[in-house]
Length: 560
Image (tube, rainbow, N blue to C red):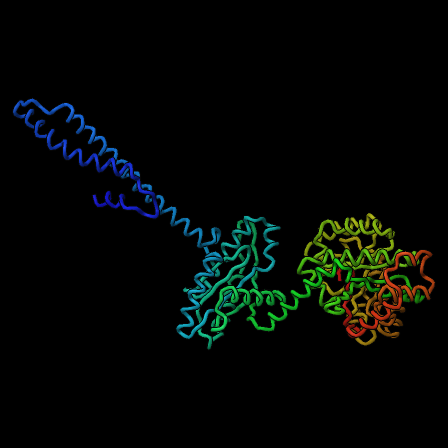
């Protein structure tokens, strides 16, 4: 009866069955009334041969019994429904608080509980460490082994993470391959946090044995902490996120404490990124041209295209500043195509024997449509394909050699030449030369600049020159800064060279003036020139103020 009465009480978890409750109460009351009349007569008729109960009253009592049975069944149904609903509520609460894959806390719950322990920690003169983790190159696991394998890795990582942190820590999966944890520590002992970070890095880096293969994962960690001035969860997490970015930037598989200078740098970076987005549309990114000459004859035979940014707000910025930001923000393709298109239009006004060389970044090489985009620019500008050389640095090939091979073959099929840039700085140069159909080798400037001073550099340059001869691949030497280097290279045979000895990269106006003096302009060169020479000379003078020292010039093309 107590349980029955409980059912009649209104609860927030279920709706009270008013009809069923009324029927049961009425049936009980009627049963008491009719039973007190019917039952004595039933007993009397059985033992004393009485007249028996009235049929109507007897029927009413039977109806009461039926109603009571109905009420009892309804009671059991309600009780079961309550159990099911409470279990569902418990499951829903767990789902609302945890990540369904790893069973770690989700972002919302982490925010609430971290805010609570921050208050508790500050009351006892302690603070809260907040660690932001991102798995390094996790995307490749999903791409190569599939998302099921990726999920298994995330589950294993979450287990290892919970074992590596203090027992009372909050552990959360924020989404994708990002995790976070928070725990109280003594601000006088930051080494406690550092030991935890080292333990996390160590346990995550251990191989994960999957059903088919062994997986190796590393993590980059950013660390921040609460103080009396910074208690907001959002601010603490943002600082840890910034520090995590610097861990990745500085080599991955490490942890980094947040510092205020990091936030200042990120703000500047965001300003540059915003200015870049507007600058691309306004045509602020322009090509500069570095001369390439035949070392045997001294004749000008082409130019390497280098991107420059003339920003009205930020001034003239060099590629080593804006190219990495463009790559990280996804702007590199748009920027590269804009500069490449203008370079092709400029080259159409030069002597038809002059070529242009452009670099592509590792990010661009991930685009399966890169070759088609370059060919489309050639068609739009009218530049013959044999006047274009695309330079691919050796480090670009490490990520996806198959994709690179497809792009290179597509370009060569259209008549575009492809060069292996920065040769000798990678780890598998000979394998790349054997498997990929390059048309030219470019010796890295770090070897060329010291060829007449460093015997090791001289030996490397001679070996590359010999390799080029044996494989019938032309050679380009970059970073030539004096005649002594030229003399040494000339002794190695016919090759193309470039460097500050032949002049710094120049704007279109300055290049036009130089080509006019050499009589290397075609007859229609005045039709589409964007600027006259005088403004470009002034621009060139401004650019010289921010040019790097010889040897540090960023070798960036339309992609940097």
